[in-house]
Length: 96
Image (cartoon, rainbow, N blue to C red; front, side, top):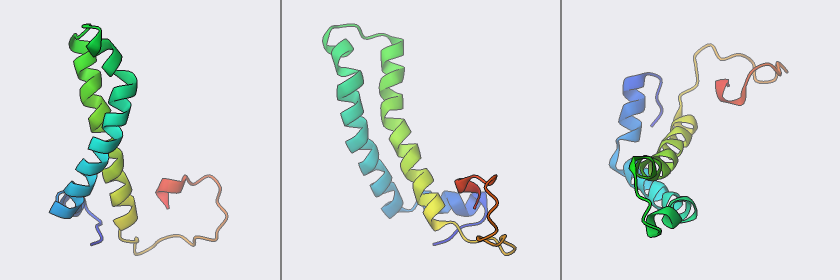
């Protein structure tokens, strides 16, 4: 399913299959990062607002990155896309 508009992009990332994959990635990668970065302070009893926010971001970040990857892979090409072989090195890879 390709997308061109924000509404279509939201439809792509909220499909049940997409959510299952993104949540799976977030749980797997987030848990690894949580153990590396937040488990020590929590086990030491140093739980405060900063640790809670960092813990939430530890899972939210891979969720967002997974969705970004999904959107970039499923994007519909533009009707007037520039020639890919133009050699314009100023264009960033995500603007192609």
